Amino acid sequence: MMNLSRPSHSILLILFFMLAINSTSALTKYNVLNFGAKPNGKTDSTKAFLMAWKAACASADSTIIYVPKGRYLLGSMAFQGGCKSPQIIFRIDGTLVAPQDYRVLGKSTDWLSFEGVNGVSILGGALDAKGPSLWACKASHSNCPSGATTLSFTNSKNIRIRSLLSLNSQMFHIVINGCENVNVQGVRIIAAGNSPNTDGIHVQLSKNVNIIKCSIKTGDDCISVGPGTKNLWVEQVTCGPGHGISIGSLAKDLKEEGVQNITMKKTIFLGTQNGLRIKSWARPSTGFVQGVRFMDSLMVNVQNPIVIDQNYCPHNLNCPNQVSGIKIKDIIYEGIRGTSYTQVAIKFDCSSKNPCTGIRLQNVNLSYLNKPAQLSCSNVRGKALNLVRPENCL
Image (cartoon, rainbow, N blue to C red; front, side, top):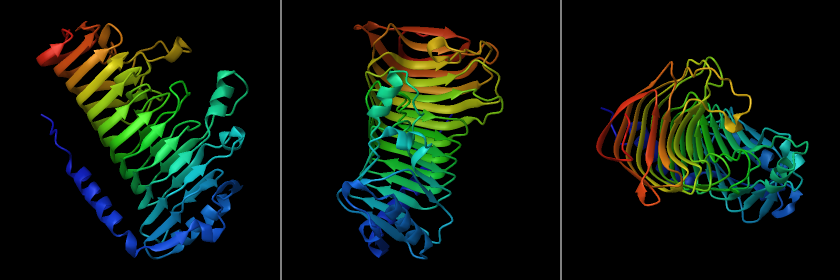
């Protein structure tokens, strides 16, 4: 039996961040205006922001980089770690805006990236990546750049992102890659429902990550969970439009780290393509998914409320047509309720070589057109407890 209470690492992480927030008055402050930044949205302030970071990073004190009200034009920036300062807080009261020409950022991997940092916080503010012009280029099948992730943290520790608005990212909005002890709270993410590859928050190769009280409206996965993710807690997240919350896609590589100890609690899905999904390509892999708890979720006209898809192949293009090596076990769906936009509300399409095991449905009530929906099972083993609608085939 898994412990369904919030793990101790999450409680300690939140207490640490609360103490950090209350101690901002003792920080050494660096105002970006003093380094030449212009809040007019027209003058390139990239150099000024990097200079402010360099000064804060070199300080032996805890520091705050302050961004006053206004609009700040910024190109691609990488904030490197190795800092003397034990804590650097970006306090943003303004809006950071990308160049109008999508090609300026589009050739970069990231717009704002933090690499190898420790104790960095981003509090407040808005990030406007000006993505629609690139989306339009891609829709016309022109020769377009891939686009940039708006905000990324790589190989970093003790990170918090709070009360931030991310608007119209070219690609992913927020990426957490190779990180430890990350708290994302009160974040709003907005992009059009047809915007391509604009995942809200992507987590991979990271542990002890909390995503709490966030609203995500986008054109791809609201939250995507990649290989090597451990101890992820998601609570009070509203998703829609978008593709739902996904673990995967997995089995991209033969040797792949597993995903384990994941909790998704008190989530709401509004007209999304999927609700709670686990997906892997049909090819060999050493990866796995285990110890996942989906609890207390509301579905409102969701096309596929509950999905395990081990034959994932979008648009049926270049499908591997093999058998997924991903081992999926110990997955709990409890208190999932609401309406399905399609007749099959629950679909378990598992690997014939590695059937899904330990799948548990408990207090699940999903309907289609005011009638019980349907459930489809392939290569899955588990059990249903208490009330379960649609009638289960486990």
